[in-house]
Image (cartoon, rainbow, N blue to C red):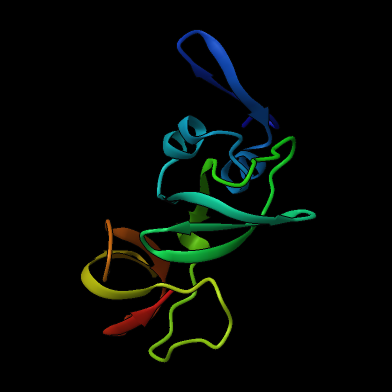
Length: 139
């Protein structure tokens, strides 16, 4: 097993790094889609404060930490990634921000891990991984 991997796109290096680092912090949309099982949320930059930006999209408003070397302007289109294994599920709406109300569409059981396919009220399907299934879900 390699310590570092190279993700290539059309003959060019898209990202080099340790597998976990690439999965947790893909440098662009191609890498995020390539490593799989990621939820990519898009919207428009509404405000910026230091290392945080507010992105407003069809799923709501989200405060997101900026990636290395990224400095979007207000009004720019922007995307961010939520890895499926980092999604937290609850049957009650959290008081903290950055939440999405969803319905459970289906489940895929693989050993002790359940991959849930979710339908947000206002947009495209999302996915998450967890060990116990519930019906009403906020992510």
